[in-house]
Image (tube, rainbow, N blue to C red; front, side):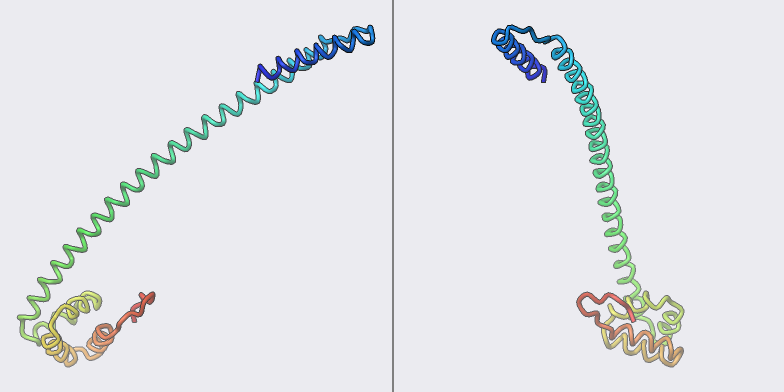
Length: 166
């Protein structure tokens, strides 16, 4: 930047000297030089401001990148925990399926009727059709409305993109 200003000053002085020699008049180059120095000073101030803004932006960018990395780490941890929890739930459901499958249908129905319907559906969907049918039959005798909702949920097959439960 300073080189450009210096070249401009030299050029102006040279032109003024040629002009002065041609016209035998002296042109005041000090005023022009003063004006150029003032403009250089203003440009230097603007450049310093821009450099400061750039430094702040770089610091903010680094902060955002660090936050993004933290969020990714937390997301990965939560994902791993959810996966582990899902695996534990599957193991627990498998144990419940074994317990209710080996129980008498009437006893199993009396217990299942007190459960959350989503849990009951998950258990029934893992049972063999023969065992599930026997328990559902007993469930129909104990609580027909609950048995109807169970049968409805068990036969519901979601269509691609349709994740609503009936």
